[in-house]
Image (cartoon, rainbow, N blue to C red; front, side, top):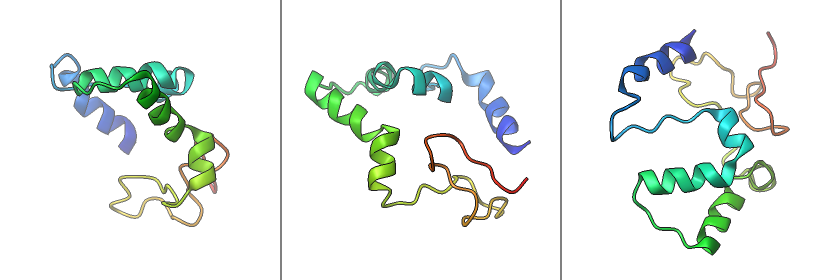
Length: 99
């Protein structure tokens, strides 16, 4: 499908110095460690308290609570997903209704 084609297109660049590939499930299991990894990759220093703030604001709980952007699925260029039924954040799990 579209997703795996997109991932596959980046795979040859996985070892390039300016590419960082992350797996969603790894980020979900260790959000703090992955935020630190992203900051390090971008050469951004975060103090321990700044890291905690970023981790909190990237959490599913925070996104559910704030949800001011309604977090629709990205890359909806060809309207493959209908925004009224396909939401990225609902219960903290990836949601794909209607199929």
